[in-house]
Image 1 (cartoon, rainbow, N blue to C red):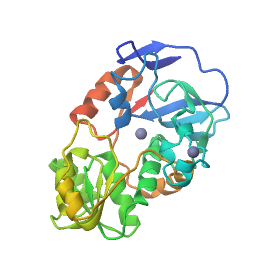
Image 2: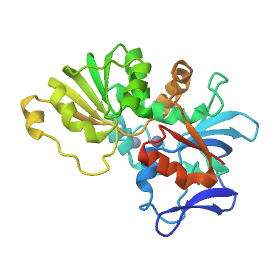
Image 3: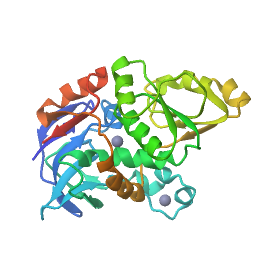
Length: 291
Ligand SMILES: [Zn+2]
Ligand SMILES: [Zn+2]
């Protein structure tokens, strides 16, 4: 089957690889979203890696599903403390190979109802991550930093949870998109800030009220300077949140049909590098590959 495989330099190339054998349900991939964490791994992950975990697919019996690529044990100390993504079992991949392939095998599939549109299953995993992290946001006004695809999901989730939501993004077109899904624009103080674009951390920390919460939701591409002085003087709470757990996948499937989904750029696997470039340049809000 065809798949995008990383070569010895960690760079993606289209290759022919054996169909996945072994345990797990066979999933025919219909679409797979490109995640920032996939792009981060280019040039770094081991040769032979097939990336991609935001999958919309179909089982052999025709059932539509998405997959969970990582699953915590649920019973260890980190899991019970709410830090499931640091569980040692969470490191194990539950899909083989990855989503940028014609097929994969998955140990944990989540059924998709008809209310979830054609390729929209690719949004379940990112939305599940947002729903898990949203629990860390205290009541009040929230600033969503970065109005890309993930920022737009955040804005809608926070509004549904009863927050007043502001958005910040240096790009005018992205701010227009944020307003389109209900965000307000204002420079005032906020009780919490969600960083979907870590480069905006400086302004976010400044705008946080004393005792405010900063939720770090994306890995910084490079070290970003943080005013520890502000963290100290305003007694800020800084929380990281990465990835999702099974319960949030189910919540995400239920919530998805109610959301305005960000526009996607759909490309065939053959055009993988082009898709990565569109994402890197910010010319595509969300890139989705179809095998
Ligand atoms: Zn992801
Ligand atoms: Zn655990």
